[in-house]
Length: 104
Image (cartoon, rainbow, N blue to C red):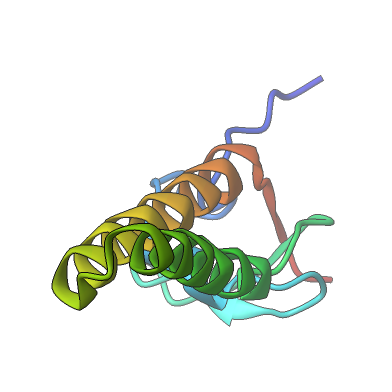
């Protein structure tokens, strides 16, 4: 049985770039940038959850810090860092757990 690599084109066997996680959706076919052939992800989560959790990761800490410290710039920067960290970890999770297959 052939071992499937994660986030690798099944046609040309090259890893796809990290930024491709934003276009990943279950059942959504897209083209490999290396060989141009169509590939589709096996049951994966959409990156839409990354946007949702990133937004919440920004709003909740910023609101709490704004309440306690009453400093808008500090709350904004802390919320921004928190939101970006959440989005990065969700993107990393999707990148490391998505297996791509050939279209039929």
